[in-house]
Image (cartoon, rainbow, N blue to C red):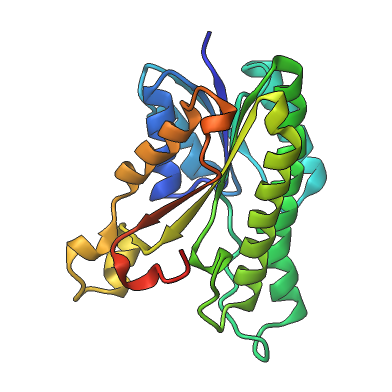
Length: 239
């Protein structure tokens, strides 16, 4: 029986690669994002091994998140895999960020992940297990300074991942936090840094393989809680 996977926060780059990888492995993949046109096109273009479902969702809206989960259950059934992948871009430092900027980052990256996790884990505990993955960043463990909203949201998500792992690991729910330490490749990244060599970027398709490996872990007691994806040793002093 096909597993049902939700990727919360899908855009071009890693989100798209995750959707394609999970579908290629036979999952029914539901895509949550505000960009309806993008996720509808992606859902229609996923590998035939799986099935795609575009569910336009504002991850800042609690009721909308819960309604989206109900839509997925009605069409695909209970949720087996959740990837909390969304981030609210807030790149200002303490004195430049507005309260609204700060709250927006927390609403998407922390509160949205909290509500998604509640919904998914409720299905998983009834079915005897499942997988919840959190996309993290260097800022989740060591802030670089000047990105206070993004950093606060990523620290919060890492804390939630730890707590869910402790509480629901004994019930068969695998939880992992993936620290992305580097720049993910893509057209936008190349435009912003045209002089960088290709070897300095992280390949989103290869990253998606790591996510899938975590889904495929057989036993909770062998499940690594935290995995680090990096493009070199220069930013890993926090390990």
